[in-house]
Image (cartoon, rainbow, N blue to C red; front, side):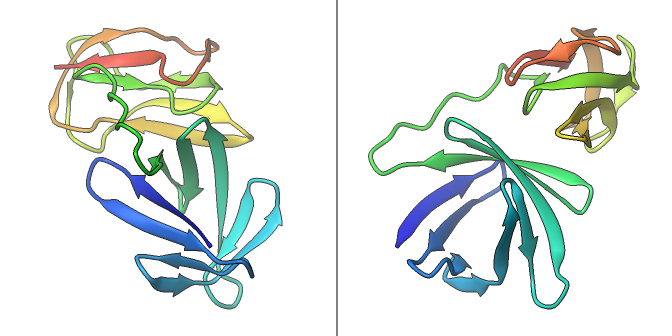
Length: 154
């Protein structure tokens, strides 16, 4: 059995995969079927599709129009530092499709600031808190890499 800890800003989850491919999250069985590399059907019956991408110990899951970023925590490993305070970064390599804000704009938590395209998906970069846009570091058409700051919010 393989077990990893997935951590985002709000919580920590213990994910286990047994030798038969059965998945459990916090000891609750979750139906999950690999359809192809990076595509998983989650849930009973027709379920829902989730697209998964990874780079090192970071996992991005696109499910129901949202992108979730998780850090895989390995036993005995130190937790990595997050991005600079107020800086929103690209979660994976992609192309900037649209920038919806300008410096000086007031934003609320959850507002879409930038839209990236990666793996044939549109990925919204959303404000993680209320604030004011301090600076933009991208424009439509830019190719960006993971961890590259896109928007600074104070």
